[in-house]
Amino acid sequence: MIRPPARPAPAGAVYFSLLGPLTAVRDGRPLPLGPRKQRLVLATLLARPNTPVPVDVLTDAVWPDDPPRTARKNLQVYVSAARALLGSTGDDGRDRVVHGCGGYRLTIDEGELDTLRFRSLARAGRAAGERGDLRTAARLLREALDLWEGPPLNDLRDSTGVAEEAERLEARCLTVYEDWAETEIELGRAAVAVDGLRDLVERHPLRERLRVAWMNSLHQSGRQAEALAVYDDYRQLLARELGLEPSPAMASLYRAMLGRGRTARPSAAGREAAHGTALPAAPRDFTGRREELRELLALLGSPDERVVVVSGPAGSGKSALALRAAHLLGDGFPDGRFHVRVRREDGSARTPAEVLGELRRLCGVRVPAVAGVPAESTVPTDSAVPADATVPAVSQEAADAWQRWLALHRALIVLDDVPDEAFVRGLLPRSGPSSVVLTARGQLAGLAPVHRIALGALADGEALELLGKLIGPGRLRTDPAAALRIVRACGALPLAVGVGGMRLAVLRHLPLAEYADRLGDPSAALDELVAGDISVRLRMASGWQDLSADDRRALGRLAGPAQEGGFTLDGAMEALGCGERAAIRTVESLIDAGAVTSPAGEVTAHAALYEVPRLLCLYAREREAG
Image 1 (cartoon, rainbow, N blue to C red):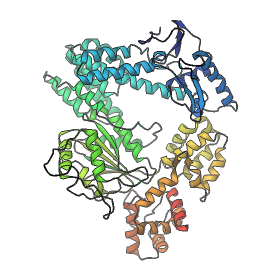
Image 2 (spheres, rainbow, N blue to C red; image 1 turned 90 degrees about the vertical axis):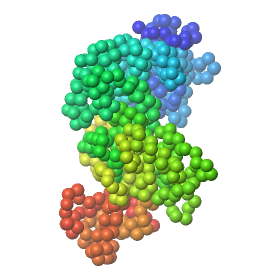
Image 3 (cartoon, rainbow, N blue to C red; image 1 turned 120 degrees about the vertical axis):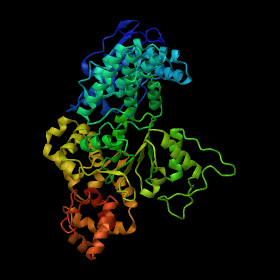
Image 4 (cartoon, helix red, strand yellow; image 1 turned 90 degrees about the horizontal axis):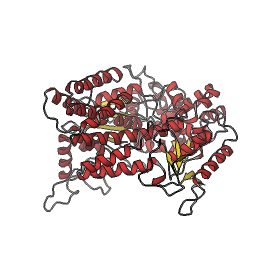
């Protein structure tokens, strides 16, 4: 049974529910929603209300593998059925479903869709909690949860596209449930949340915030042994599945319960962490990198590792790996997780003062006022900005305030796309429990002590998996040999494979073998790796600008032999026209800059085979020819 909206829709209006099976009622009577494909289109439009939904997204939801040639006409029929169900125009006279350059847009009000009402109630509940009005917060959050009839869209999850939308909705519902449970615990009413938390933990066993709330609710209800068992079960599960330990905050709660001491209201700390998080959305097509992800999670979970450098050539997926880890760590950093890009959109480096200013705003770091001293003007810092440029300096007061904050808080900071080590030295923690992940094309060899994770190309299987996520597994199976040629022509770099996959997802008529032939042509490959405003060539250009003039000249000369499967030291000496010592220094400078890769194990300089990513080779040859 569907609960009516808290803000009633006008008489005769349709009320839709996604928080459970897809259903609709008009004046209390259920409405038939038609055949399955029609319901898939309707569910996809409703999952993105008042937002253009691309035709390709609708196509993938209905025909994930092999859409028919009549797919677009069929979609028009299904959308017409949705118009008939909604009524052709809304109260304001505008069309309810319109088609534009961005796709189909369904216009719907809060009183007509449970997910919009859910979002409004949840926002109001959190605002009440932030004001300290816990009773109002608990009531509003409970009203939001009462709209939840079970796993969202549980009758249509065999469609990959709809399943992704449903998982997003379910994650939002889980977060609101955690907010509500923590509020009830703070009000001393833990008993109302115990059973629901147990059921959710069984369905989401690795979600630490749920576990913490369950522990607290059991403890407050006088069920101490069960509360301690929740922690023990979770610790064993983490060790078995991921080789990790529970977060320090959860371990501290466990120790407090063991001693029967009063907890320091960790539920409130958990909510502060959630509100203090400033991360971009987790990458939806993250693929592979299992060992690197496991290593990064383990390092960031260790109290002894404060700085980790994730390095690799342009397009190797450094940012995606760092963000994936940051999202998975959750409550391991109770004082927040923050992401800051170190470069502007054009690839140029920001100033250290700009980056520190953004970090301070995100983390709420206040700088004490000093009489007669401007806030950001007195103490210069090393940076990647030219010496003759006018650069706002980082004030000593701002730098000291930042270090004091790091020393007293356990936060995770992701500094993305760092140009060099001098830029970030003043931003790294000197003491305290906070951790920083730096992503960079170069090795940042001047930083010590840090732990380094180097990314290269994906394995063939991982690259094919990524391509399949974008073009559909059915299309991938039509010509697996051509698919393998495509990912290898992309150098198996996630960025290039992703761009190629997005291009193929649009060009549905294009045979994989033909696209593989295009990518195999050195003179055309970079022209083919463009999808909308995403260009592999532009990313290569940004990395090229990071190199010194000498390194650019050297890379241009090495691109020829490197394109033939790598080069040895003797090949470098010949291409560069220099002796052994000069060739070693040049090659090692390019390794440090992330433009050349070397063997993972120890080997003499003469025996080593050095490589340059294929697409960087092609770009270097373009520049050399130009």
